[in-house]
Length: 162
Image (tube, rainbow, N blue to C red):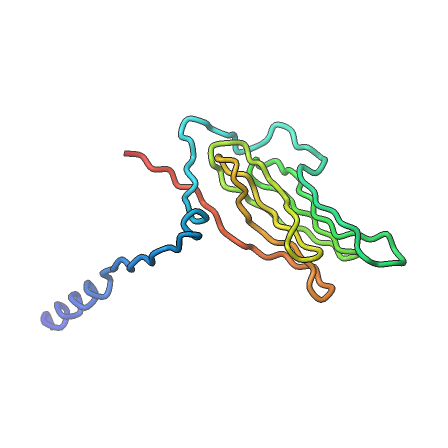
């Protein structure tokens, strides 16, 4: 019985051993895009806003080709009481929806941005990082007369101390 328990313990220990996967060599073009975002350690941004702006802080709007109605494809970002969280209100003609946009805390006040997308009736929602570089986050677009929101990338900020 002791022999079986010893064997079981050895197998469990061997099975729980974690190996580090070999890292893939990034392409030159991906190296810049995958550069880590470093947060300045001294600055602290409060987690909650004192006042919430009722107006959109970023907006993209373009008229649709409907000849009978005055309809638009639009995306608007609104502040919430949480500093790094926004409500994204999207609309295409008479279709409406909303989504939550959570930006990473990089030690600076968040700067949400909406840029025109490559396709018709599309835009990319993102933010400016602490180096004033646009970081894409979500894509809002119309496909087969359906309003779609897709997450393009995920972000997190790690702080290291020695």
